[in-house]
Length: 335
Image 1: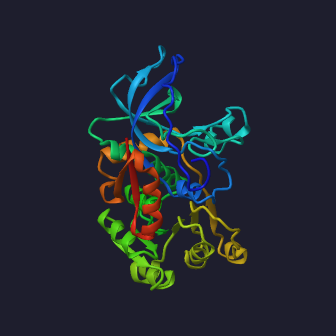
Image 2: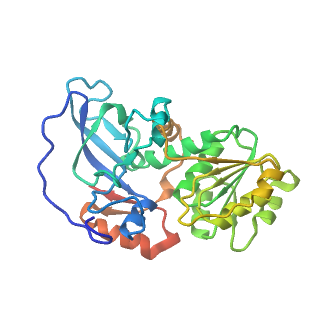
Image 3: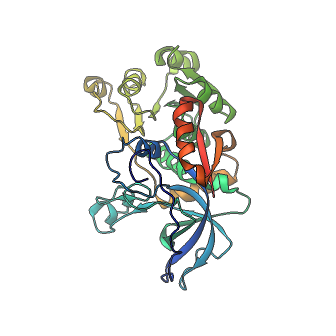
C-alpha cells in the first residue's frame, strides 16, 4: 500500500539464504483485520507508507535454517507478527507483547502479503493437518481472545457481558464460554453479527440500538447482574454502559481501539470499587492455546468467514468490507 487506498503489486526476488534460526513460509491465507482497514482509509496513526500489509495468516513451511527444530518443510504454520527489542523493562519481565519499541508486521514493518515470508523460529507456531488454512489464518484473532480473557481474574461460573459482536468480540465470547462462564450476553448494533454469534453458540444476544444494557442484563441475568465485562467496540458509550451497569467490585477488560479520548465516570469506578483492565495483543502461549481450542472444537470458526478473495483482488476485498459494513465478519485473501 503506497498511500491510503492505493495498492501496488510487484515481482520481487525470493529471499536469500536462510539464517540458522530462520524459516521460509509459503503464505496460503491472509485474514483482513479491522486495523488493516484503518490503514487502507489512512486513519491508522502509527503506520507509515509504503507498507506491505498482512499479519493474520497461515502458511506451509518451505524451508528451514540448519538449527531449526520446531518445524519441518511441509508442515502447516503461522507466526506472531510482533518485533520486540528484548531489552526494555516489559521485555525483561516477559511482557514482550507490550515492548517499549514494539513493531507489528503489516503496520510498522513489512507484513505477510507476499508469496514467501521469512520468520525466526521463536515466533513460529505450527498447527496440525486437521486444521484448514482458513482456520490457521484465524489463529491470530483467536489468540487475542485467549489473551484478553486470561486478563480477567476468574471467569468460571461468572455472568459476563461482551460489548461488540465483530470477529474479536465473537471470539472473546467463545473463549469466555470455554473458560467456564455461567452466562454470556453479547451486544452489538448489527443483527447480522448477533446472528453469527448465535451460530457460534453464544445463546444470549442484544441489539444495543433497541435495548439498553440495563434492560438486557435484567432479562438475561435477573437480579444477579453481571460480574465481568469485555469492551470490544472502542466507544465512550459502550464503556460507560459497562461502568454504569456492572455489579459492584466487577472487572471491565478493555479491548476496543478508541479513536477518540473517552471520558470515564471515575466517581462510579471508585464508589463501586470497579477494576478496569487493559489488554493488548497476545503472547506465544496464547497462540498455542488458540490452536488447542480450535482443534478441540471449543472455538467455532466457520461462521466467521464471510468471503474469500484471490490475492490479486486485495483492493476489492477492502472495498467489499467498506461497502458491506456490519454485514461482514472476516474476509480472507487466498494465495
